[in-house]
Image (cartoon, rainbow, N blue to C red; front, side, top):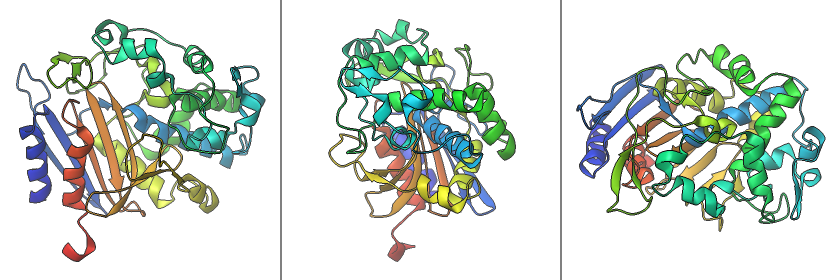
Length: 357
C-alpha cells in the first residue's frame, strides 16, 4: 500500500488540507490518511470520520427505488405524472413523458437548477454561499426552479446531469412507499447492511459524529480566492440528490453490495449498471452513467465502477472492480486543487494496467 500512501501525501503537497482512503480487497481492508481535518488545530484526519457525500447520495436513492421495484410498489416505466400529478409542467416540461428510468439515468432533459439558474449560482459559488448555505428548501421549491426553463432535450434522447431528477425520485419514493425518504432509506439499505455511520440529516446543520472541517475557496474557480470554513450547511438543498452523511467504511460496504449483486435480482442488477453515454454533456470525461452510478476509464486505461459526490469543501469518490471485490473510497476536505485529479492518483495506485500488476 506504499504507492497509495505516497499518492495521499502528494495530494496534500499539492495544496488540499486532508485526504482519507479506505481500500477493500475481499475480506481485507486498509486505511490511509494524509493532511489535517482542521487547519487551525492541526488535528489529523482519522478512520471513522463522517462527512457529507454530496451526489453519492444518488446511488442510495436509486437503490431505494430499485428495492421498491422489487417489492412491486414502483415500475421503472412509471411516469412522473402518475406519481406527482401537475408538478412537472410548463415551458415545454411534461411529467407524462418522463419515466422513473429517465430520472435515474439522467436522461429526462430537465434543467439542472444547481448550475443553470443564475440566482442559484450567485447563492452557491460566490461568497454569497457563506450566508445562503443555511437557506432552507423543500424539494418542490427546487423542482420549480427547473420548471422556469425549457428542457435540454426530449426525454430519453440524451444525457444531461440534473439534481432535479433525484429530487423527483425522492418524492416518488415517498408516494410509492407511504413513508418519508429517510425511513425508506433506513429500512431498505442502512439497517440491512449495518451502515451505522450513514444518515440523512433532517434540519441539522452540523454532522453528528467526529468529522473533518470543510474548506472551500470562494468565488469557486478563482485560484487566488480566500479559503473559508463551510463545515456547517443546511442539507435541505441536497436531500435525495445530495444530502447524505457517511463514512469510508459504510461507503465501501454499500458499493460492495451494489456491485456484487447482493441487493437486487439479476435483472435489476443489469438495469442498474446499463450505462448511457455522457459524451457532449459537459460532465466528467471518460464516463458512462448508470443509475446514480457511473463507470469511468482512468488516465491509465483501466475502467472502474462506482460513483462520486461533491459539495463546497467535501469531495468523495468510490470506485472498484465490476464485481465489487476491490474498492477504493476517498474523501478530501477541500476543493480548490482538482479533487478528481487527486482521486485518480490514488485509484491508479490501486488499479494499475494489467501488464504492470
